[in-house]
Image (cartoon, rainbow, N blue to C red; front, top):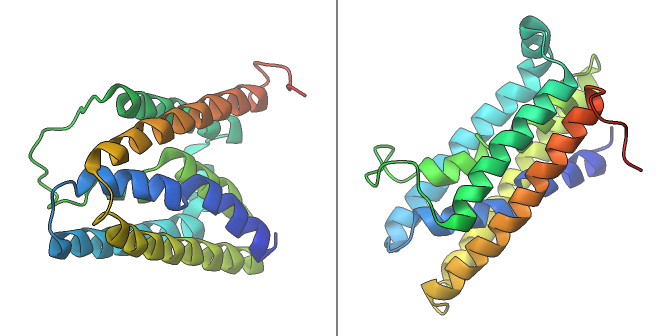
Length: 197
């Protein structure tokens, strides 16, 4: 796998649109200092967890005997439920965030089920070179996300929060569709469904 291929896949599953969505939700009404604290702490956590999955993904999959289809199916279901909450405006977590403001952004970064599923699948290789390529691509995507957050911080000075919430709903629908696609891919991989051409 080339760097460009890995980067393209990871941008699709954990790129700026998903990160910005979570950042808007988590830092609504926060001052600039808190926004940057949330961004930096979540970025550090994301990078650490992602690189761990890249390094240990193959071992964990074999240890727990998890198939590709089961991983995709689980990721799709979790993502769809999360996206449904975004679209309907429901919050399952308590209003007081005991994580100090990093919960939503960290969820988009390192607990994004589709992103983790793809990291596991891409990391399932015996070639050390591919592992380094995947690690570099993931680090590059995280850097791109952080740059997008910086640009968003400037843009939010001129954009009303009402418009931002409309964007949250729109992106929530796209995430729900991505969840459904992952469910179908998982069912196809498990041979429950015939491949859809």
